[in-house]
Picture 1: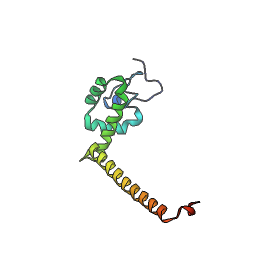
Picture 2: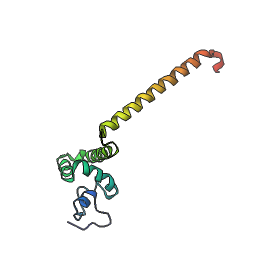
Picture 3: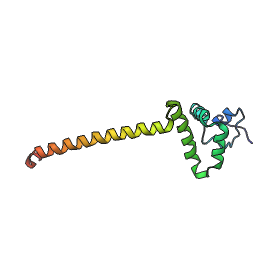
Picture 4: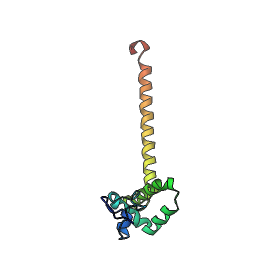
Amino acid sequence: MEPLGNRRTCSVCITKNRNCPRFCEYAEYFPYELQSQYESANELFGTPNIITMMQHAPEEKKQMLATSIIMEGNAWIEDPISGGFGMIQKLMWKIMLHKAYLRELQEKIKEEKEKKPASSLY
């Protein structure tokens, strides 16, 4: 394996305390810049499990899997009780509230249009 060059050690290699080879298969998915987020995912899944998941994933799905692993780790840090499910519940609740508000506004607009005669619109 060739030396690292100008880039920094990937998060997986940092966690495993090893030298990151130049063409490390995890550097693309878990770069150094995501180290703090990777640590959250590592607490949830463990690096051996993350590596196994990445090895079994088809090449075209690896980026989505890596993002999912990071997001799930962050979700459990933010909400240790509900994790990702709690995040989804909160988002669904916000969507419901916004839809209700939108319906309310649409009704008000409709009422205002009905109040004004057609000739005053121009």
